[in-house]
Amino acid sequence: MMLESKKYFNPMLQPSIIERLFFVLKLVIFLILVSPLIITSLFGRGILPLIDKWFPLIFHKLLIWLLSVKIKHEGNKKNSKECNLFVCNHISYLDIPILGSSIPVRFVAKSEVKDWPIFGFLSKLANTVYIKRVKSDTLLQKFFLLDLLSVGEKLLIFPEATTSDGNRVLPFKSSAFSALENQNFIIQPLVIIYTDINGVPINRWLMPVIAWYGDMELNPHLVTLKDIKFITAKIIYLDCINTNDFADRKDLSKYLEKKINYVYSNY
Image (cartoon, one colour):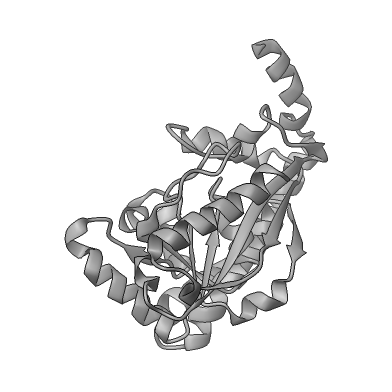
């Protein structure tokens, strides 16, 4: 079984010298373009509102270009302009630039993320909203998110609270929706699906190349990723819903989990 897996992966994981040089060239161009944006973002954030809003979108678009990710959209994306909160399944760190390059949102993440190597720095550049997952701060975090939504901030949460192995959607944490109880907000449910790598349909053999979960080491995963010619991902926009239509956060959480899981499982 291991030999078959290795044989199946080899054509994808051994790019030619020309392809490697092309990636290096793209990386140099990426760094040249991103460096002034990063400096402007670090020193202009909070002073120039447009930087806070548009820098993450531009940065993610450049990152998607570097990684050669093709993004397809399904459903009515126009409706999402009226939404306050976006809810999506979570498979990989790639979800962030894919979604962030398509929708001008701020991601909500646990506070520990800002101290992670690489991702901590990137999350700060993306203007991520950090929340603490401790019971003593539950009420404070609830009002913090509520305040952001009330002033028109568009937020995106991953209610699984972690990444899955890509073969299923994990149970949603209803606590992710505590700020929405007895409120009137519009939610855009999203489903992110990775369809193929280098034109090869993704199955259980290839999913670990994309999905980053459990005790997977980051560096080997990133090295594998850079050797891929292109990845195709799809964002599916489901019908928007109103928080007023649900009795409480648990009711809302169950509905969204069932809806997103159904679409993902039957794709």
